[in-house]
Length: 399
Image (cartoon, rainbow, N blue to C red; front, side, top):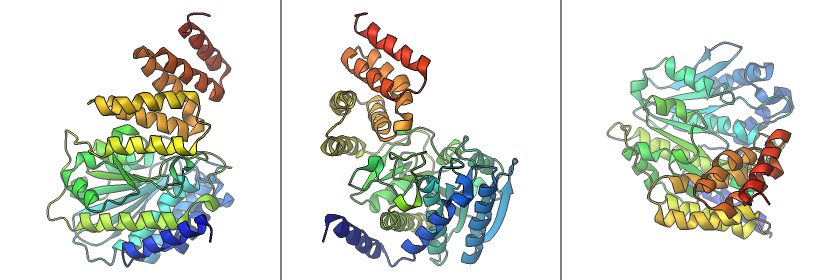
């Protein structure tokens, strides 16, 4: 039996052992496949494919027994909102369903997150939780989180009754296409109660970190602005992120089911908390964060034998900074370096405008030069490439 088959069977066993769960690999696959089908035209907000997807999601929620409403916010865009239960307090489970448009299947980002919402809606409704469940498929995240921003400003249910918002984005693919699976959990820094629940359900594949390491990149941001305690779950970016290769066939459904089962347990624990989680004005960042980032560096170096010089130099420097720097700067730069490597389509921007200037400011000229030379490889703009070349020449002393 091959290692791949052993790993596949192990994941299936883990899913079964996590809980006696209604999470279905087959349903996850069927929903992702339908949403990511070329007939949906990439589910771009306002498109016919996006509208068809909203109707499909609404139908699945109704089949599960949820009361459903469409929240229109102009331009043929709509959030799909389903509710189960009559308790005033509620938990939000949400993801965006819009994608990149024609030619881009947008399976991991974010048909997979939407499929998880549908599975959780089914799983949580029969738990007898003392809170209601509000399941939301947000539209138009890709153009600036417009759907979730509209929702928090026009919520049909008082936001002060939201116990927590659990948001899912870019699931079902391994971060950076590495062999170990990683489920990132962000947002615990803003709620002691949610941090306690996540710590209770911690698993080896979970990486708990501060949300500032990725910035306002998904729909959790809309709830954070309103000081609703939140958790954000993602498997991270990969080589096909926002690309034509983000197909349903590349989603790892057993691992996606494993993630959904863990998230379901966390949601149940939150629903049964004796006190409502409070949003912290001053975040308390997870202690395990530094070790987790260093572990990612080690795994990348182990699997990427052709790791570019810029990243080898940054990783070595950042390891030292993570041990000695008590500010948020070191973990933020470490996360930015990992994301730049993980996402070729965004690497030029991250290298040019964040990592390069950081090392210039630190007077680490050798690292800055290596970073800008790496950025040149991915720069598609002629003027931008020439500017980077001039910058490298200047850093070399004009030689």
